[in-house]
View: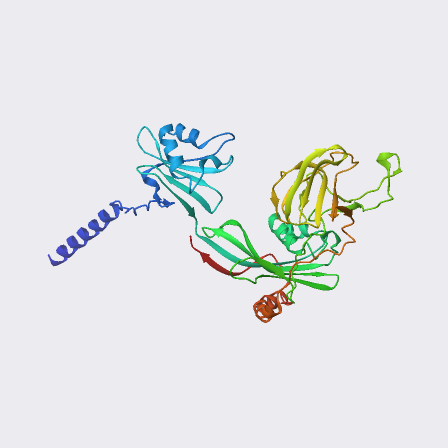
Length: 421
């Protein structure tokens, strides 16, 4: 009997285990966390994302989403000190947070200026607007390369975008002729790149320091703010001399050639090989190449006239003016103030010209002179009183640039900094 009882117990236990195995397992779902963007819980709204079309107005967009003109006018008037709704631009993305009922009327309009900045307009109950900035991470990187053909091709081979190439060209525009770079010249620079959500690039930040090795010389550049009140940064060499001059060497950044110089006895084929004074310097470049102001000043002429074609003339001070001829298109109007390096037009072939170029004319006391032979004024260097502080500031940057052990490489991360909104 004892053996029978034990056997029955074992059968019952085994049967119980098999039944347990047959029972379906219950999966416990973790609650899904609602996404919050721009301070709003998205689950509470119908989210509509779109892009502003050509000719589309703020009013037209809201009207399409069941907000009507008395309210639209009230919104536009209430927030004009923060955001002028008349200035929304075609191609800009926007988000509308609408009600989840059958009407789906808009309650919030979010205008995205760029990847980081947005204006949030809330008119669900009362009307308010704020400028919103996404938190970004600033990553400090270093890159170096050797010139094989041109700076732009070398930078491109490193995976760097063209706007960073232009920044480097800006820094060295006064001290380095990029057209004269030689195979084997090299560079290294320390720069910042900005990221949203850790992985989405939001563009480049400051170039902190750089060095070009050209014709056996090391051309250093260090970004430095000499006056904390103004907060204006300039680039200086290792001795505290400013890299920027009052005038740029050329009205085109790089990838140009001088096709004709200032020459008062030049014979011109266009005019039957007759002697016609050429009072400008011709910089040949591809049609559409940006033309830049060689110094800051006020536009005193911007028009199309005769053999000059489309041209712009800038007055820099009581002594100097510059003129830029044969543009395909002008970007600036008479009376506008332009800063050195601003794009004022694009290379073309308007007027009397046999090829695409910009004829650059340089005026001194109302007379046209050869800018390549003028001793032009230079910008202000650092005062002797702050040179010790400057040299202490640049020493670690200089050490980093001169690290000869580092091989040629793709840009690498040096350090990361989180910048909160």
